[in-house]
Structures are given as C-alpha cells and as structure tokens.
Figure 1 (tube, helix red, strand yellow):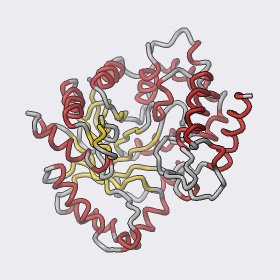
Figure 2 (spheres, rainbow, N blue to C red):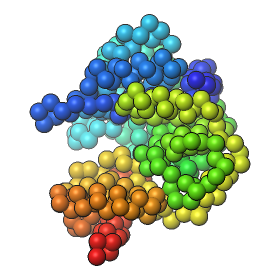
Figure 3 (tube, rainbow, N blue to C red):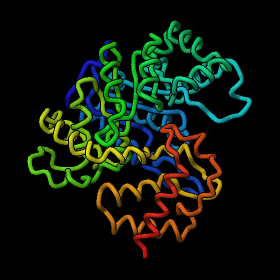
Figure 4 (cartoon, one colour):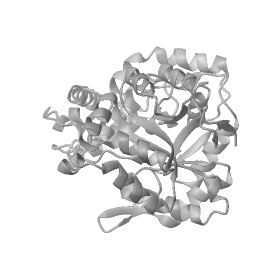
Length: 379
C-alpha cells in the first residue's frame, strides 16, 4: 500500500480509504441491518492490506456503520494507528434543526458510538456555501465545532461537499478547514481546479465517488477500445485516474466484500496513471461533455419520490445505454422498473426532487429524456 502526507495535517495515510457507507447488509423482517460478521471481515482485510483511513457517517447503513466500525477496530491490535473520520450530518428533523447545540450533541453521541475520546477528522457533512451558513444561523454549529477543537474532541475540521467548484473555493477561504472530501472521477471532472486550489492551501483532499457510484466499473465507449492503457480493469482505471491528480491524497471506496478490498488495493498498488494515459482518457471524455447533463452520483437524496419513480436507477440505466453501450442490459433492467411502476414515465413534474438534489440536476426534464429513450428502443 502506498502512503502520502494528508495535506498539512501531519497524518500519513493510505492512498485508498475505506468508506463505511456500503458495508454488507442483511434483511431481518422488513429492515436492513449491517451483516456484522461479513462487515468485520471487510474492515479487517482492509487493515491487513494497509488501509489506515476509514470514513464514517452518522446515517450510514441505517445508522449502524459507526457501531460496526468501532467493534471491528476494538478487535484490531493496532487500532490507534487507524485514522477515523466522522461527520456532523444535516438531518431533516424540522424544528429540531432550530435548536442550539445540535453539532455538540451529535458529536458526543458519535464519540460514544465509535468508542473514542476524539476524532482525527470531523466534517460538516455534504455542505454547500449557503446551507452551511444557513444551518449555522439556526444552530451555531460553526462556533460549536471550533469549541470542540479547542477542547481536543476534534483534531482537524473538514467538510464533505456537494456544490459548485466556486463555492468549494469560498469554503476553503473561510480558513478553518484542513480537509475536504469531494466528488471527482474521469466522468465528472468539475472539481478538478478546485482540488488544485485545496492542495495549494494545504488541505488534505479525499475523493468520494472515484468509480462514479459504480458507473465506471465498466469501460465506457471509446475507452474500452484503447490499446495502450496499463490498467487491466475498469475500476482499476478509475481509481488510478483519481490518484494521478497531483492534488488528491486519498481515493475513498465503499467496499462491501473482501474481494472488492483486495482488487482495489491491488489497483492502487500499481500507482497513478501516466500523464499520457491521463491525457488520453481526458480527451476521450471531453468528446462526451453532454454526459455531464445527466451525471447522477446515486446519493439517493432525491428519494423517496412521491410518484414512486426510482430516479437514481432510471438515470443509471440511461447512462448504461447512452454512455457505456450496454444497451441490452439497460433495456432488460428498465423493463423491471416498468413492471414495478418505478419508471421515468411516472414523473408528474411535482418538483420535490429539485429541492433535494445536491448536483442541481433538472430531474423532471432529464426523466422525460429517459422515458423517451426507452420508449423508442422498445418499439
């Protein structure tokens, strides 16, 4: 495993990080729970292969991820060498959001769940420029975060990010952040220059979605025909592209099986792509700029849809058809959405999803395009 200095924080971390948002799950009755045995195997295998950066979140895996990470680390002899990141999550709790002390209560609860005295990194979760300040006006969470750092409960303050690159730079210029976690992959390079800026300012840079929410687990059209790439697999190509950006320190992957851990660790061990490979892939994807109009990360914030449209899945299948050339697979899977009444044609343009989408996608308009595409190919 390769390691790198995480900005100016003083931490030396693995180039591959374990995201605890996709631990293996089991169904008990009508509810999903973390499969503790399998999840522990995944975490321990990651640690065995040298991963020392784990990213957790309050809501991950039905609020169980932090408990399972804590349990796995307690069984690990060198747990003190593992860097743990947690986040203060924006909850949709109505008037509860108006209360002062919101961040402090969440922080103390997460420290209890993870059985820690402090967090190496504690992040404002999924913020943009406006909502970060808007929540602060109601809760005072910026002051509470700084107080927690003064008390040693938080070593370093960061933020995970869903907004425009310009606003990422504005947040960095606030001067309190030492880490940023943001989206970046060769399909979505919007944050590329902002990542450079973060690096220049000494922030640690952690990338979520390096494989585009699974979309880059297959080779897109064009790239599959390139003969001189050193990467042997699609996921490897995506991961190595991300760490070839000079401002990126960690590629974060939500791994749900031991096999995924081993494959991703092997991919990272091959190091960054060459500059020539990076230029080739960038040029290829520049030819498909229109894809950014329907770049959905699958974050699920738009769900549930009042009219039962499975928005992320509809967009995913659209991209499989249009981008990756997996037409037969996309059509077959879209027919399953139709059978369940979850297809794009169910959209009535109510606009609820527009208020929730962190990528600011014009979801109703895009759903029309999805419905039109699959109605044509079925004819």
